[in-house]
Length: 284
Image 1 (cartoon, helix red, strand yellow):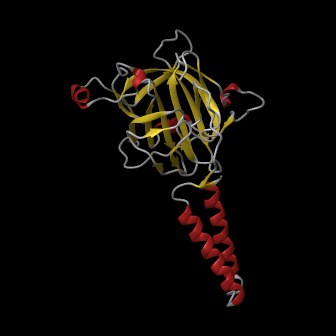
Image 2 (cartoon, helix red, strand yellow; image 1 turned 90 degrees about the vertical axis):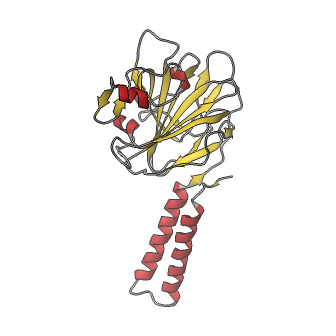
Image 3 (tube, one colour; image 1 turned 45 degrees about the vertical axis):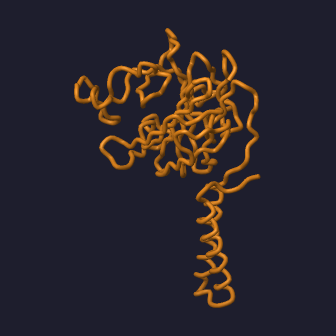
């Protein structure tokens, strides 16, 4: 049954009640030359907008083993095979120097984690087209418009082993590039690592957009989640990226970069209900 996400009841109720009260007052007391009914209608319109934004419909969750469901509603921007070529430096590595500096994304140590698929810290990735390696990942990027459902869900049955908030270099907040641009992957973001009972990990990045300024986690490190269970939301337009082992999974979605005539903006997926990856080896 559809409802409102956490935090949505108060603003919807406030503007709905205010709008009705102002309308009644304008009709039966004094319309102030039509201003009261107009203000009441505006309040009701805001209540409808908030109800649409905070909507949180129930979804049928696929039960077949070996599937990863979408963590977000939206159009698939791209699907890319990537390889880690750097990571955020530790204090020791920073003190020792030998860092690579990027004006927009900050400092990087020019080696990935010893086990890139552990997603121990934020890593720098580049696209690869040939010479596949077992440490490669698939990345699916999903663009969430302001009209989409903004509740995020766990891609598979797992527990949260890492949750990390990052802002733009040298900023307390931001930057906030439009979420449909490639540069937005280094906007203010929350990186969450999910681990299954078998030890397999995937990384989900909630990324703020030009309008979205607040990422709200509902779960934390150590929490266990079912496939498709809600774990947070991003307010207004935004983006969610998923990285999984390319040796274990294959993508099941079409992106805008595929230029498929049926999906010019990329395939639209629903959080918790639509499959974005299928396992190509042993079952989940």
